[in-house]
Length: 551
Ligand code: ADP
Ligand code: MG
Image (cartoon, rainbow, N blue to C red):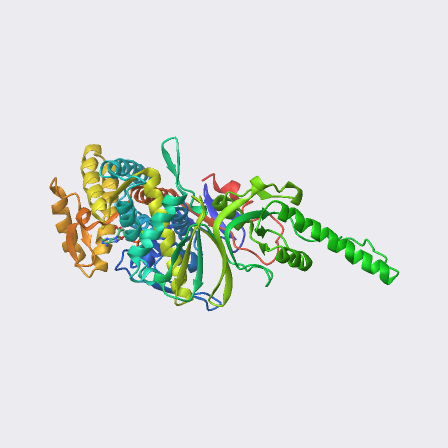
């Protein structure tokens, strides 16, 4: 059993197998682990960053440049590492881009905090300094940002293209074409409410299929359903489609309990079947009466019902996912009917064309040419599964970036230029604050320079020379825009180059990185219970903890 010293006496508080790290040891371990995680994805930053190949226990391969995906696949165990993975997930969920930046920044903040701890600066001083620095950085970010409107397609396309640019596997040479699709999708689903732009990314569906090239990726003004039209005699192309969305089955409900139907003669059997057929025919009649020529059914469709639908020239798709039904409703304006009796002509949706196409050997149904749909699809194509998946991740980054840009209406300059500007302002702010917190704010400023530093490294530049040059540029009033051009390996004007990013992505990266760093720094006691083969009686792992707080 592990032992705790208290007033000269030893107390047995933790069950065997548990471990405990205290004070500096706990901090040191957490910092080392977090930094290791950050370091693992550092080389992927920017368009000249490298990719990683991840192989799962089952041998599945993922090739990616995406911070969140890499960390998600890494299957880390240490709690500090898990917190780092959380940063990436939060960043991904909140803004959909900037994951590598956020994690890298957290790692760098912790590393620098470790150095301060070694110089006997107390953790709470560092935490306070970091808090102030993060708050100030957010203010500075607003100051160095530029406005962008939903109508400003050109700027938005640049933002999309820059955000997708680092996933070279996924976008190939089609970066700018994909950027156009992304902006078109966001603009199509965007809605203005009280002067605010709201984009619900859930209604931009990304459907993918191997085959073709990434340049075959297309925009569909409506929804693509990965299902087939159920019956071979149904029409496969319907113009001016009037669509019913049905939440109930086109089947006769069979009882599940042990009700018995007793049939004693062949005539009875015939009657029974005729009755069943009539019920199905009635159901189909109700659909037809509404004027619909296409049915999307969330549940099943009986063979006989399929036959009747086909006879009436109505196309039908069955077992459509709930999420797709919602998208169809948004795209076509149809109301999802929960019962056949409810269907009226006003519930019907509209699509210019509903067409079944064979894609890579499988049938898919395109519901397209909708009227101002608030739900659209981007259909990703590429030669292999790996490229399609990375293409999807690139598009998600692009969608996240453009959404963030239009919702907040602001962007900043990339290539590390904004980080240089923040670092410089923070250093000035640090001297205003003075005291020991000044050291922490300076450390924050140094940490944030990890972005230009890493971009410079990825371009093959000497990172120290690059930082020195950048600092001198940013000292001048007109030097604000200077950053790393990763393609020429030169310090250049990012505004002129069109390297721009949404303000929200940068803000979120700084907020989540500093929060995570503060959280890990605050920990000075780590107790981990080991799972034991059998309960040993006595108090459990956490049961002994009451005694621990007393020292
Ligand atoms: P994240 O996961 O943080 O989004 P990325 O791999 O997408 O990481 O890299 C983003 C960084 O790369 C940003 O700092 C951005 O400014 C920079 N970047 C992107 N494109 C360029 C470019 N063409 N030139 C210089 N920097 C770029
Ligand atoms: Mg990115």
